[in-house]
Length: 242
Ligand SMILES: C[S@@+](CC[C@H](N)C(=O)[O-])C[C@H]1O[C@@H](n2cnc3c(N)ncnc32)[C@H](O)[C@@H]1O
Image (cartoon, rainbow, N blue to C red; front, top):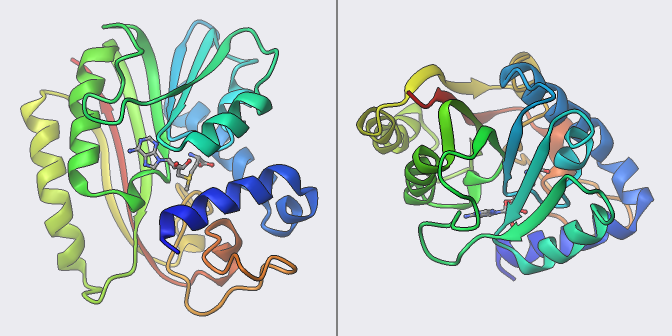
């Protein structure tokens, strides 16, 4: 089974099982996402917000009561269906499917978004995907609009800082070419618990099989691995459209 399919099954299980949600401390994770987005992007009641790679849409759902409008979106049709059930009947939030090919965000008009974030989305995707999003965000963000992303670099055979630097090169030059203001552009290597800015907001390297209780088939379940994570490589980017 691919990592991608495990992911679909994981969210299906998470949606229907309060026990799994408790076990993997899902609500604690969502609270962290909400507070990091609120603080980092200085969210306010007039903001139109874009959540990229929304999963079940829980972060956007909580934020919808604090901002003007939330757009959730995802690539995964199973997640989109679950997410739409989850946000059912809330007026100022929607959940769209990104277009399969670039530019991804064609459902968003130009200069429409005040704040955008993508939490734990790009670890599964090649760097070009993030670069394409940076290009699209330059279109959909209002002037002064901000984008925040945090994601971990998955374990590779080459588990060295140079690996991270290689990946970051393309991203950094896209940020420059697209003329964003860089507010924060950090690379973290270490124990997520020692990185207060993003600790528990990143999925990390799973050192060994993780106990997910009755959900034995979910041994790749990313949320379940927090307490077992001892080291990770992560990227945090906060940029502003000029
Ligand atoms: C690890 S989950 C994180 C979900 C949510 N952001 C959270 O923090 O709970 C990653 C999500 O990103 C979605 N995703 C992966 N690649 C994507 C892409 N290129 N565009 C949009 N969503 C994507 C996956 O389907 C999944 O829902």
